[in-house]
Image 1 (cartoon, rainbow, N blue to C red):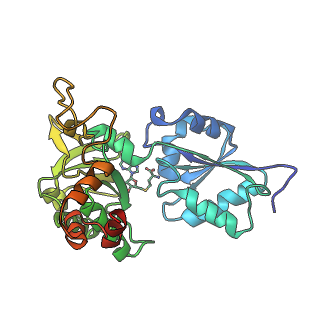
Image 2: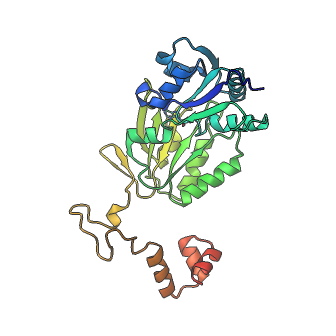
Image 3: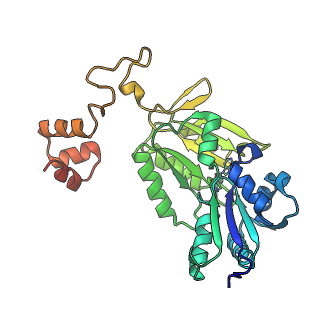
Length: 309
Ligand code: SAH
């Protein structure tokens, strides 16, 4: 039961990628306010300078359930608890699990202990910053961990992301016992992307053993990849210039980047000529059947039929 005379609080603190300088002010304040810190030993080490007279509870990486249970119990007993995670605690982190557990035990935001999620800079953006600007167009994250997700689900998402030309960040790409997953991801991507597609391997970003390597999709299988690596796979437009991986934002299809002039057929502040309205007009002019358009644009026939009705 929650002890209402000593209301506890649970902070779910994302500490960012590693170094204290990449931690938010709110994350520091939450740790300062807490009397109890819980987390994996690696993360507690990263915030060691901020530990004062806290009670510190270290747990193993695999003990996520225990960690969440313990954090909730301590907060219920009236403590101010900071459960620290790397990156953002809502991104493949403890936040979802903690809420699931709280709800299962009858918690509501109105009646239970206070819970505050303190956002942190996640691996995908922090790793991206070290290699250039690979996420300047649509991107997604996929975890290769099949500890809790069936492989066909992961494979379907990899395939869909590869097919739809997303830049993709692969979290949990390989561990001691999981080495084949990254090879399967490579095979699926090679069904849709060129072998020379740029790939970045960023390991231990903003930590003492940080390494950054630029390779290609063809070389992904031989790359040095571990649990501490985030893999960034470029889309069909991503380029490498002087060791920097850049995904164009799309300005070049509308403007001449040398003098800023608008390209023929395009207008400043207006959608592209191939934006929604322009594209519909083009479809109406074409004599192609809905089935043919569905194949050409890889879109469902039902959608195109509705669009053109
Ligand atoms: N909550 C974390 C992700 C936890 S999942 C976040 O928001 O970043 C663990 C995975 O995150 C690792 O396998 C790795 O792929 C990635 N990761 C976390 N920290 C990293 C770092 N400092 N450098 C590179 N990858 C990192």
